[in-house]
Image 1: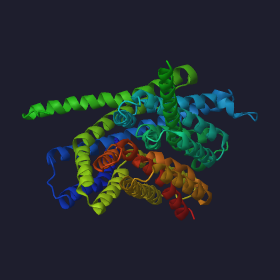
Image 2: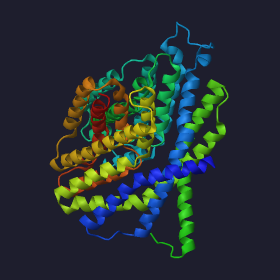
Image 3: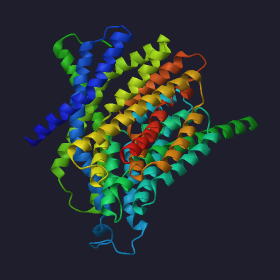
Image 4: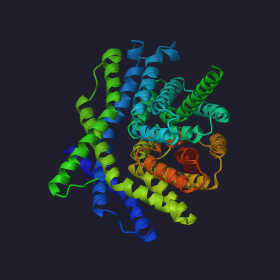
Length: 261
Length: 256
């Protein structure tokens, strides 16, 4: 019964969210482009699916993805797990939270490598670069970037150091890399930062950060809890450009050796 | 593609597509579940709370995601893509820019990840007593965040389209944006910085990325002398950068 009232509540909210999008599309199609809606039956059916799907997803997210992230963060950072005591001893150091960093990095890698948006973009990149860039290479580079990003991001939460230092430091590295990276890869690398963090990853990773602030002593959720997604957006830019630089370097070397030999 | 004409034929076809999407959503979650399972069995070795609720929730997530993506593919993406192409070819700058802005705004407002994260942010802000803890002001805060982010994505797409048309180098704009982020960070209240930085990555997922990429690559392909790889991409980069600036400004207004 509970599940049904929850479902209808979320459904009404979702209808309010989706209607503007539908109204906008219909307006542009009929008024500006002055063309009839192609296949309006299919479009209506599609919108019904979107509504229903979004509702189920948002309910499931609150029941599963958020709690999963929080429970994992709490269990891996609980003093009982790390120190075997009820409270955090005074000599606790950041490296005691080793498992948290490992889990963060692995979850970043695992969620990114299978990310549909990333697969789509790297496929398009391989296509427009006429095979010069390898789809799997791109995906691995981006997933590694997310793993490093979330690993360092959890380290930041545990140590309580200011978020802007890391992100701005990351930007400075990106700026320097931009000077040396091959020109075609730059927009793609910048895009990859936004592409990595999508529907399943975001809630899980956000919950991981917020969960950590509840068990690590002295952390404030509003200040320390957010920021993991920002890490997951900046670091792939670096690894993607790094990948392109390595590919460029190898191709140049190969060209040189074939010319000499 | 030959469409089956009978009603039952269409139903069967739809179920097949649905099954494919279920498998797809399931495959997205398998690495995450596997990792959590390994950690539970090998590292944590503690009882896991509310297992039944979580399993129901995960089933809902898989079903919901499959339905959602299937709905997008049969309903939204075909119109979105043909419209993007039509506007790119129409030649009217005003309508192209307006369409770009509206596309950015409306797809972001409907982005599931953004809905989830802004709601969580309002809970955190209420707990930290930055806003009052009644459900009305929490909802207003979450909606305010979403509208701010959606506006910023709309503006970002608009700027990105002008960039493609003019052929400006992307690095200059992005690095300029980074500098603005750095400067505003100094003045923004520190309670907003985390969510502001995060909002950049949150905006661009399931709904926004395919439509926006289609618009950019479609536009770059219609202009002579433009390379789709260099000029077509980059819209998403703007859409991840501007929300950071806008949300920090929103925080300066709300928390002061």
